[in-house]
Length: 221
Length: 221
Image (tube, each protein chain N blue to C red):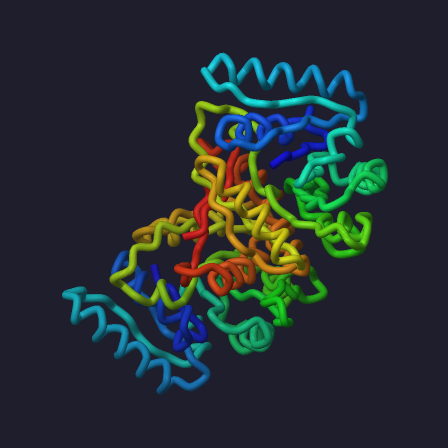
């Protein structure tokens, strides 16, 4: 299938593009607000994979061009750009699953804290911004971009996935499971997105506070 | 040192008593609202350890008797009993570290959700209920009681620990690290307790939603 990564020039987008490109047969399209930046990033990712002997299909486009025709559209943008990004592509979303990995956080002297929007979670915000007939899935919230983008690193991470649409959830769980070192887990409905998103500031604080820990993800056992 | 487990007749209290009894040199005191129940539980735990060839010192007492003289007092009670339990022992807390493992949750059709009290977290509620000079540490929130109490089970779990008092935090991290299969991690100040407590409903939902997963804890990697 075709997977679009809107904001795919950023850290999480890069990591997902490289991992999807290496570990799956899906066509990856890197979206950006400027088509040229999307195409440049796609070329870089393709070259990085070619250096490892991987012949992957990674294309670049403007966000709405990337979203058009993709079965899965990942909103790999910061939480505060989420609603705008959905709005910029909503007229090209057909039979599409929207994936929201963003988390709202704020920093104080003790570290980062979960700071959800008024609707309860960033994933719920994506669902509110999306057209009614487009299912939204929360996933990939808890991946440390540095390690995700380092193809020499083994992950061993779990990916909790939430959605009110079980078919869409199954599609995204399959996509996550296709990546080496990721295991998708059903974390429930969109109402459980806050607990999943809350993990991200905890992971960042744990890495900051404990010697020897960096770029943490989570494994449930 | 002496570790009191108030409400130590419950599931989490039992698991902690057995693990502290087996893996540490600390004296464990099982507290209950009724002294007799505390003593009965202590005898059961002692016998269970003796069956495994472990000669552990586990005593039983009423909650205030257990708390008096203990260096660490664990509030192993449900969140809605927390403030009452602290109040029932506050005149015997001297040079004591109070530990809060409780989590507030509520259930809807999608599973369990984090439901913190108005002060932001159950750990913060414990701090509010405690005398001003008694440091409060949040720890042991994310341990599945069934596996904790099964001494045949290997854990391999992390224990995020939060406190505003770094000496108290160090004491409790040492206590957690003493248990085989637990690794204590510094998760920051009390302001980070919500992120730690939020993990518990997520763990329970993941075990409910995913075949083959039971009694989950967490490993950060």
